Image (cartoon, rainbow, N blue to C red; front, top):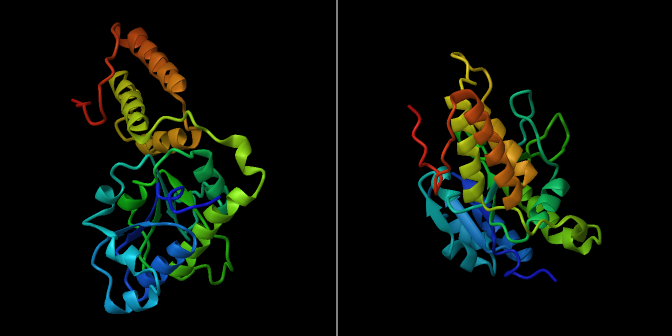
Length: 255
């Protein structure tokens, strides 16, 4: 049975919402589907938001405010961004139903679901903070949904999926958390850097590629250990010495 407690690990993150009323409508729909963690990058909701958040004012009152998206996603294990844009440089990883299955496959993970501004969405730098991207199929001649409607669809997909008997077949209780993902990603990048993998004019964003790869893979501790072992062996073969594994993300200092 779905309860607020079972979905409290999921955060709805709004990046600088523009239009009065949308945030209130989102608070109401979050309450409809048992979501409680609302995070807002930007300003406090307006009076009209509280009017539209009927019987859900507590979600607005308890919303967390952040100066930027980077701070809003701190402490989360996985981050998924919703986007209406399609293109070679903006690949789509998940449909709404696939997104819901992904969320339920990681029942212990803290997951952020990010929605951009109504006017122009997320900046490229903000999008790069979200390894996975979800797209809602719609009329190609008019694909842009209202922000509150997009959040409603996402919340409903997650809320409804446990009623599907197929859900329980792929739950991954052993996937590592976000800190361990960051550590192994940084380790792999350090080894690539130290062994001369990168070209002087690199056209591929390898950091983003590895972030997306690892987020989709959801490795266990054993898999992370094997990746570390494999990349350390590459380092030994090319440089003649091993590469230490640091205790937390950000300890690596490239020269």
